[in-house]
Amino acid sequence: MKKYSITNSMNIHPKKGKRTILEMTQILKRHGYCTLGEAFNRLDFSSAIQDIRRFNYVVKLLQLIAKSQLTSLSGVAQKNYFNILDKIVQKVLDDHQNPRLIKDLLQDLSSTLRILIRGVGKSVLVGNINIWICRLETILTWQQQLQNLQMTKQVNSGLTLSDLPLHMLNNILYRFSDGWDIITLGQVTPTLYMLSEDRQLWKKLCQYHFAEKQFCRHLILSEKGHIEWKLMYFALQKYYPTKEQYGDTLHFCRHCSILFWKDSGHPCTAADPDSCFMPVSPQHFIDLFKF
Image 1 (cartoon, rainbow, N blue to C red):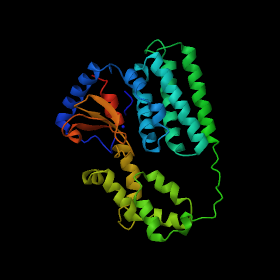
Image 2 (cartoon, rainbow, N blue to C red):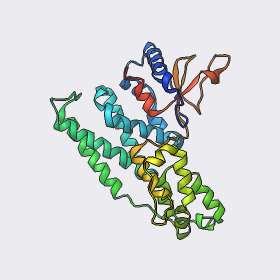
Image 3 (cartoon, one colour):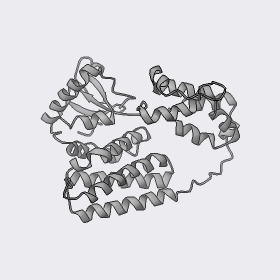
Image 4 (cartoon, helix red, strand yellow):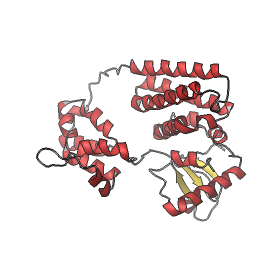
């Protein structure tokens, strides 16, 4: 099976969520997906990272595994995990795209490995301890390479961001769903910085990610009594999860009992295929193998 993908969120009713995951878990086990490691090996994530629409999804999945599921991977799955991670790092070093995502992933992974190595004997570590130490050293090398990464300035005589009218620049900023991306883009030119500091922009971002009752619990006001939406966004981010967005995501077909990337699709034989498809977020992918 080489059909694989997610949408923005899983959208499962809270009361039915656990039951739905249990049902999917049982179906997947009947089709050979007994462990997270087996599923990780069978889905071609090495190819998926070459697709910009799937890149963030795979990185998020690797980050979640690094935080809590690393010891559940078999020796083969571990090797596959680090091979994919190596390809991701080399891709970022080559094309200079998404370095912050990878830095966060490596930071979580190095923290987990330090804890596991220090607690060897108390926790289950598959493989020789020297292999894990070597992996940690490799991660530290990657971190240093990313820290030294220099963005090359491209010489282009064509149209640039600075040439676009203000309303178009504003529209670009309003399409971002990550506050750090807005701040990064705001550092490009003085005009973009001015637009990136707009209170309405940050208000919309807060309203997209968080509920009104969450605002009330963490309200931040200026000296003049105005809500500091930018500060609110980063404060709320510490307490509540933000909505996840991916260009392409893994889906599960209840009729055919397979996982596939949405944009690739799969030849479903159901009368109404769309009614059988269910988006699977990175966290729900991991949850499938916790039962």
